[in-house]
Image (cartoon, rainbow, N blue to C red):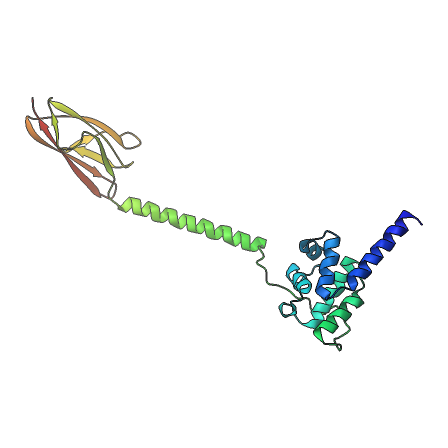
Length: 230
C-alpha cells in the first residue's frame, strides 16, 4: 500500500471519528482545529461571517439567521472542511428538531451586513469639509486678532524700580503691524514687533507711558513707574 493511500485512509478514519461526536458544533470545531485553521481563514474562504461560524460551533442557534440561511452556511463550511454537507445538515435538523426544512441550501438573497464604506466621493466630500473648517477657523482667528487690542510685553525694566542714573533702556515687544509710542514719542519697531528705546529720566518719580495701537485703532497702554536717584 502506497504512503498516499495510507494517509488518505488515516484521514478518513479521523473524519469518521469526528462525525460520531456528540454535537454538530463539536464536529465543526474539531474538524477546523485539526486542520489548524482559524475562523478568520474560514470566513475568507467561505464568505460566511466568522461570528456565524463561531455560533455554529458553539451551538448558539439563537445568534443565527433563518434556518434556510444556516443550511447554506453549513453547505459552504462542510465543503471547506472536507466533509459531506448532507451529514452536517442532518445533524442540524436533528438538533433543531425540524426535519421539514427547505431543500434549497443556498438562499436567493444573501445576508448583507451594514458596513461603513469609504467611496471616493465620500473621501472628496470629507476633504472639502476639512478645508472649509480650516478656512473658517483661519478667518475667525484673523478677525479676532484684527479686532482685539494689540499685545504689549515689557521685558525690561520692571515697574516700580529704583535707578541711580539719568536714563533707562526700555525693551519689549508688541504685535506685528502695530505702532508704539513711549511718552507720546514714536518708537521704531523691527519686523517682528520688537523694540528697544532709551528714555531720559528726571530726578524723583517718573511715569513712563507705553501706548501700542493696531490698524483699527485698538490700543493697549502700560505705565512703568521708575524712581530716579542721581
